[in-house]
Image 1 (tube, rainbow, N blue to C red):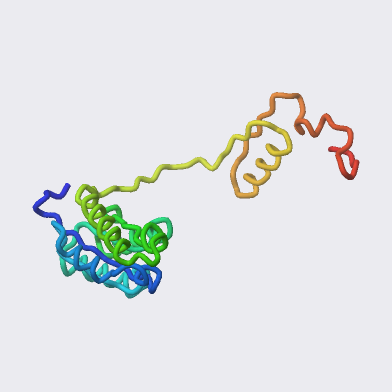
Image 2 (image 1 turned 180 degrees about the vertical axis):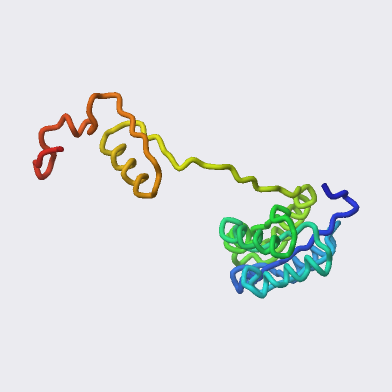
Length: 199
């Protein structure tokens, strides 16, 4: 773990076109971020998730020897993998990333309240910087997986599941407690609305 005196955090504030910058004063957020402890680089971008924005992150990681990155942009649900991959390409562990959602949590819910939205965005960035101080590198482990599946129940759903899994290349074990498969369908004479034979 990096010692507190060795923390070098970079903050990247995204305009997201007018999605964020239309409501939030992103320049003021960036200026505020530069005053936070351990922050050594702050960069504003029109679209941080686009290639030029990612290049700015990689450039700053190398130039400023960043060991933590905070991206203030949209939801991590959409772009967290993008930024983690960006960190990895820059030679930084991808789990040393923290995101502040200033689009869905700020600009989209506070339109028409620029001053309040900007203050909230500053709070979210400050919180993300604080969390970033405690991030630790993570190593993804790979484990062998047996391409086999157990399907319990030989009714219509179980049979269909077994067929779908087999079509995907898995060896399938189909287990049924009754003497025959088919479940309730096998016990029916005819099915509505066509009154066809159930089996």
